[in-house]
Length: 314
Image 1: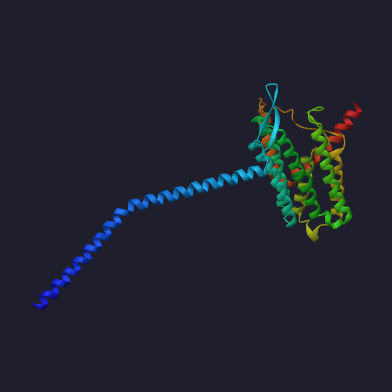
Image 2: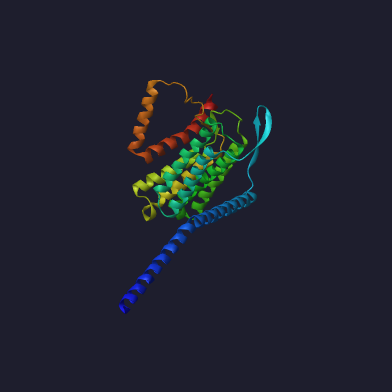
């Protein structure tokens, strides 16, 4: 009888435990939708607070950086427009980056990457203006930004690359030649900006700074391929490079006409032989890019004095 009572108590205790567990499960199941709702409310509140914080941060940044505003002519009226055009300025930024990277590469002694970076800057510089004209996104801001980028990519960068590669070994003569190049590039750009729309658009007065930078970059590239870097660079070659730097600098500021090639109509039809000539040019460049580009840029630099002599004779 005692055994029967003890078993009966154990079974009752087990039933009570099971009933308690079931009650707890029911309580948990009943409260889960409420908890989920509260969690969603907390998440929504946190997201709203984050959005408000980002909005306040953006407003603070806008108050620190004044938006650009310039006057433009539309339908004969002068109106003010805020903001800048993105697409052409992206190409200008690409040219600026390439010029800066050329300086960094030269400081590391990488005289193969440095001139190639300057040549890439030439490509970006040639595209930004054309893209602006094709998309009707030309602006005063873009023109000023392009000029400053040209000063870095085609004025400072070539001079520092030349100085790091060869002119530094010449002492005062070397850094003087590099400075003359930078100063003449600045003068060339300043004169060009003040003479926009003046004179024959088919000619530049003075060697354009991108063409001058191409001569400097290709000279470094050719000598790099020949192994004339560091201690292997002959002092006689360094003197020739200093003279070349000074001559190219002077050509940028003298009143010598250079073809601008703006008269070419790229939208019109051309003879089939013109396409064949382009193919042959590409094939010729691929044979030895640094030497071919150097010879082509030197030929263009000499075309100005030749054109001036022709005008004097006529």
